[in-house]
Each structure stands twice: as structure tokens, then as C-alpha cells.
Length: 176
Image (cartoon, rainbow, N blue to C red; front, top):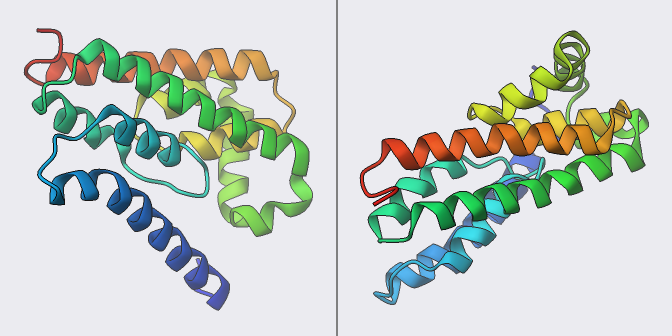
């Protein structure tokens, strides 16, 4: 991939946005000596599932479990906020179509996601949501390709639910 001024500026803007979101939520709570709250979890998690702010939000689960937040609440917030953000990703893809792909994500990335999506369809959506892969981009591409919205979101919710149930189960205190 060729490094351009536009891509560097895009990455810098994304980093500033991530720092601002994390700093104004968890960072503020930690500096104030307060326990991390579920509003912070929800805001960061939502932002992490927007296609233009890719963050490894799965790491939040063990942190919030260690703070004593119930696993079932974290699963519900994770799936709910992830699905809300992915609905936006899908809608952006649907509304803007393939004409603006080069502005949103690189043509190269789009072609890779498109090829994966064409080969695997719903299984691609499920797998990208189950694993810490770029599921927001997959939902953006499914919108561009006019994949059935309800089907895409149900498959996405299934993958997210399985992922977060496993995460909560794996880390101590998740269901206890």
C-alpha cells in the first residue's frame, strides 16, 4: 500500500479521535480515582465499531469485569452498541455506494472485503464479528453491495453475541 499524505492525515485524525474518546471517558475516571463506569464502556465500544474508528474494544471486557461489572450487562452493552454502530456503517455503505469507496476506505481494502463477501456472504459477516477482525468494514461493504439489511444485522448480532459470551466466560468473574 502506498503511503500518501491523505492516508497519513486520515490516520492522525483517527488517532486524535480515539485519544479524545478514551481520554474523556476511562481516562477521566481513572485520573479522578473513580471506578470505570458503564457509560464509558458503551461510548468507547460504540465508537470502536464505527468503520472509521477501528479500536480493539474487546480488551475492555476483562478490564470492566475486573472492576466488578456483571458479565451479562457487558455482553448486552457490547452487542447493543456494536450493532448500533454497525447499523450506521451499513447505512453509510448503502447511501454512498461504491462511488466514494476511495474516500472512505482504500480501493485495495474494499476489493479485499468485497471478494471475501462475495465468496462467503453471511459467513463472512459472522466470522468478522466473531473474531477481532474489521467487522465494521464488512458491514460497510455489505451496505454498498445491497446485502439484505436485516439478515446482515442478525448475522452480525449472532457473531458479536458468541464472541462476547466467550470473552466473559474466559475471564474470571464473568458469570459469577
